[in-house]
Image (cartoon, rainbow over all chains, first blue to last red; front, side, top):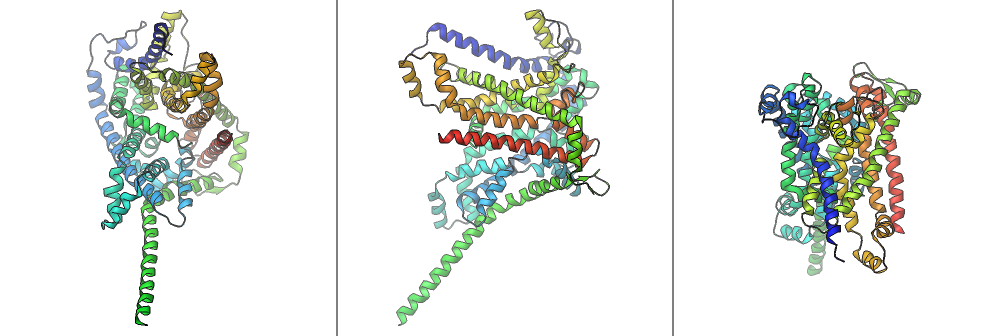
Length: 275
Length: 308
């Protein structure tokens, strides 16, 4: 049954109205980040800045050390993502292609980590990290976040679908076990690694609670912490500055998302299958 | 004689070889799993055990732990602030979950049409989901101001007087629910969409031939067959909402009054400002038990749904 022109127009109208609702706050962030302070406090809506005030960005990037927060966020997210991908695929490979006593228990144990909210372990985790002397270090930010139960589950599900013939052929050719993992399993798992990588990177980039607890030195703050600090400081009312900070924190992720959209969606639907 | 001896020896060596290869493979498999398992022991299992222990003690991080048995839990259930925090958390989770049902399903139904540029709309709806809640909270705190964009827009469109979104205990929680809805709707839309696309298209064809209109098809086919998706969305969104933290810390810090003091914020304050580690751990246990019960009930329903 073909839709009538009227029905199609109606659908597009609804789609556009919804799109406006989703876009306006993001647009408002971009637009306000270029405004002068007076223009952020007007009583009439000004959709566009009177002129592009780039100095908002130079103020937050230089004077408010957002360049440090940015590089910290990047360092932590890259380290967390690489560690998660590597360890999760190692574990996922072991769980899906080998048989050993206790395998089922180990799998259930790892799955159970997904059920426990982070709030439950936050106090003891803080104590462990303090005991290890990792407060205010990159290690403290990275290592406790270096693996997730979801990551292991995700990689296991994918590696299970890799045909055993590849593995056996390589073994007959005399490839070592770790060589098989590096040269056969990892390259064949690229789509899963991409999806998990994007989701992990995003999670790390956006994380607020854990950095808030392990870090208070200005040199180690990540972007969400920087934004929190600025919001609670004298800048709390300087919305133009605050919005340029928000743009710095979100623009990289928006760009990454637009490039790797399919990876995101696949990650969600695969993750959704865990139910 | 010699030949039989040989074969015997051969058999034995083959068996030894097989055996060693076999157990070696077991060992190798275990070695692959070892780093991950070690990680979870140190950074998950051990903290969980500790959390349980700490919840039975009084402890300020510095002096030695004092064992108080169920003292923390008994105190909690007498503490009106804890009851309030539980109530706010549950109201918030319920509000987010129910509104996601409607909004995300609506979006998924819209996106599930074959139209030109539909992927563009899908992308646009999803963008808020990738922003961190910190950023979302900052944008919305700005828009929710007394003379902020939302009040100005409402005044221009409907000529309403300005609403004290975040500064009144009547609207504060609702404001944050609306914000979360904006932030998460696209994510749950994707989940509803995959549920919709799993429904066999023949069912709709048959219904159309029988003369069922759009509304009847939605009520008699789509909604009943989406039941597992609804359950899944409910479990995930309730658990995620119960864990939400950044918006409350940044937008209201629990106020006005205690109207948005959710349990995660209370745990954070009790642990890291008041240094009541035991009480904080006890509260996190209660939160955990609530989540587990909720997911168990959800999955039980889920399973019974699958079999029929």
